[in-house]
Image 1 (cartoon, rainbow, N blue to C red):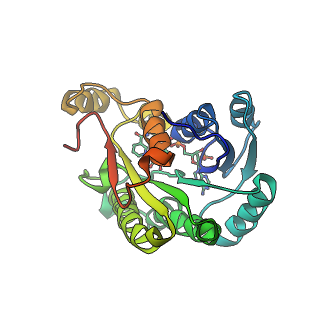
Image 2 (cartoon, rainbow, N blue to C red):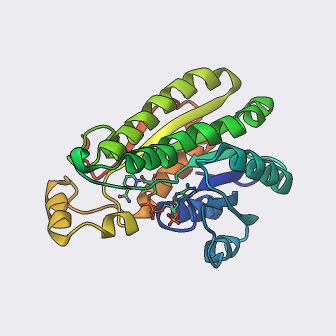
Amino acid sequence: MIDLKGKSAIVTGATRGIGLEIAKVLAENGAGVAILDIQLGDESSVKEVSALGVQCKGYACDVSNPETVEAVFKQVLADFGKIDILVNNAGITRDNLMIRMKQEDFDSVLNVNLRSAFICTKAIAQHFMRNRGGRIINMASINGIRTQAGQANYAASKAGIIGLTKSNAMELSARGITVNAIAPGFIKTAMTEKLPPEAIAKYKEAIPLKDLGNPRDVANAVAFLASDEAGYITGQVLGVDGGLGA
Ligand code: NAP
């Protein structure tokens, strides 16, 4: 049984979509949650998670900016005392055919999806090493394993996340820290709502389980990887994709 009571987590990109669901599922299992997002808006995500009876606080943080991350993580540690789980979830898409893709759209996707995971991991690593434990869960994508036209930036960022996960797992395992990635397939969020209905129908047909996933499917996998039960799992990529990546 997953029990995260007494633990605290940082979840990036957590005001909506998969990140918010991760924050909620971690909270349902007893963990306190620091919600980091580029904009906190009306803090409804913080209210929703706090209502689950755990410590929850929101922090405006551009996770691709190392100075901001350094300052915010310092504040989070002061507020929570100890952090046990880091979920590098924030991500964006700027799809276009490579030939038409603007350099800034390539760079921003790499910055938010990949560079941020390096920055946030570095910002928490010493804390985890001192505590001789910690869980890092990086959000990859099926597109980092097998991809499609129009996603040179996104596919490169998510393939990069998988490499980063494996290398960091090797470096941090001696201190009892595990580093794993989750590779969702097509999940019902604002990111996939942008797709035309014909494309959604085509994906449903191709997915062995014949439907898109829900944010909760991904969040449940995160909660497992964050738990004591997953203590002997590191450097892995867990597909949550209805069988699409099989
Ligand atoms: P989403 O609904 O667009 O949520 C992403 C969140 O990240 C948003 O709140 C966004 O804020 C925030 N964010 C963007 N840039 C940021 C930055 N620089 N610093 C901090 N926060 C930032 O996306 P999602 O669908 O939940 O996806 C979450 C993760 O799962 C992403 O890494 C994505 O690549 C991955 N994924 C999703 C799917 C899917 O089917 N949805 C499939 C595979 C993988 P703004 O709204 O202000 O931009």
